[in-house]
Length: 250
Ligand SMILES: Nc1ncnc2c1ncn2[C@@H]1O[C@H](COP(=O)(O)OP(=O)(O)OP(=O)(O)O)[C@@H](O)[C@H]1O
Ligand SMILES: [Mg+2]
Image (cartoon, rainbow, N blue to C red):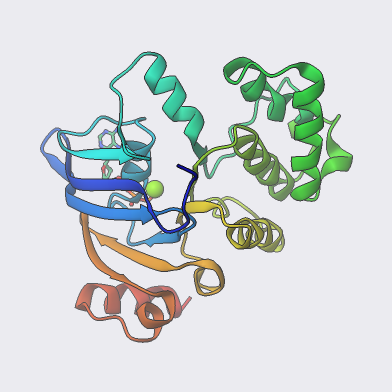
């Protein structure tokens, strides 16, 4: 059956996670639908990164289930490699390979995991670099690019695997202010193109422009879930009100 926009893609069901004594994900239940853009916000330490990492199986969970496109997250082995290819991840710190060119950074995954020829991988990578506005940087090394350009390479790299969803964990928080918008613009365009995205970000402008839903986390729980306009103008829970009053005064 062809993929339908709006059908469940990631289903997180009663998930708990501890680090030792610390209960970092508390009975998390949420569904991300195909084509949906979900923005996760909340105070430091509330479990936002852990949730992303659990969905990509970079962290194990204690109980509950996570399914991606109807399949339970595999524990290990080739199933896990396949899942990782389906779930793109973009981190705050880019994590590009320093000794490989921009083009090689983007083609490495598809060539290794998807077994695509060099010519085909190069062609697709150049299209993606063009889409994020840096095709002219393809032969450079990561250190020769600005932070905003490097983050756009990281986005192109994750798109190159043709993922079903991309998780972006604070993709702009390490960037100088003048570079934030160039990365947000790329993310807005991806959202418009129908990419399913889970984005940890406090960029309210992005959330208002691109998000279908805001998930507010505090202390390991999903405290509030709402459309961005409703969340930012009329938060329901005292914790969300308090959090927004703090970020809005900055
Ligand atoms: N590998 C780990 N070992 C032990 N504790 C951890 C580990 N990773 C995260 N934690 C703890 O789990 C809690 C949730 O961390 P997490 O990184 O998910 O928060 P966050 O919401 O992403 O915060 P931030 O906004 O600062 O990125 C924090 O108390 C953190 O210290
Ligand atoms: Mg985090």
